[in-house]
Amino acid sequence: SAVISQKPSRDICQRGTSLTIQCQVDSQVTMMFWYRQQPGQSLTLIATANQGSEATYESGFVIDKFPISRPNLTFSTLTVSNMSPEDSSIYLCSVKRVASYNEQFFGPGTRLTVL
Amino acid sequence: AQSVTQPDIHITVSEGASLELRCNYSYGATPYLFWYVQSPGQGLQLLLKYFSGDTLVQGIKGFEAEFKRSQSSFNLRKPSVHWSDAAEYFCAVGASSSNTGKLIFGQGTTLQVKP
Image 1 (tube, each protein chain N blue to C red):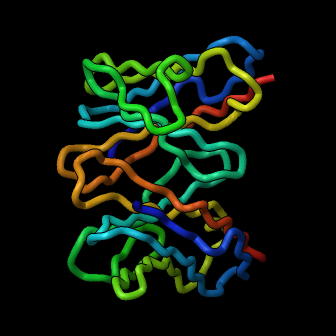
Image 2 (image 1 turned 30 degrees about the horizontal axis):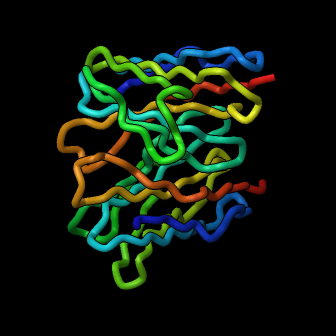
């Protein structure tokens, strides 16, 4: 497994502002992912964070709204930009190791409320 | 396209009773299959996984799941439920033929345990 931490654990933000969420893992991993979990819903993949290059976004998610960085193999950030109440969700990062058959380990999540 | 269906949105069982949570998937080849559990306010914890071989897999916390190719199912079972098992359960499928590492999640099943 992997030990994953996220900061902040929760936040309440005003409409129109931005929030950056950090994800730190205790060892080097090959892939890092960011998910959104809207209230009462399942997880939706936002993007794959690529080390040293631009993230790969899923359909419906764009870099201007959700810029992602991954400067090294153990750290990534997700920014939620120009927030609206519809962005209120739990944001989770996950990691995958080499040759782990897509097995992912998840951080504790960041609970975001936008007023 | 891959998809995962969890037919039961909400299940209530009595403590000590047996449990079965259903999961059906759609995928053209042999998938990688996972069950995760999410306790209130927490991230996701991996319960068990299936990659190949024995179709009955054992996981943590006394859970097991059976892969049935003919039914495209991967149902989760536990012989005797404990009050601490109350949580949200997610089934997920990963592509065995892809190195993207992506997982597709079902909608989740909320388990309530009666005393």
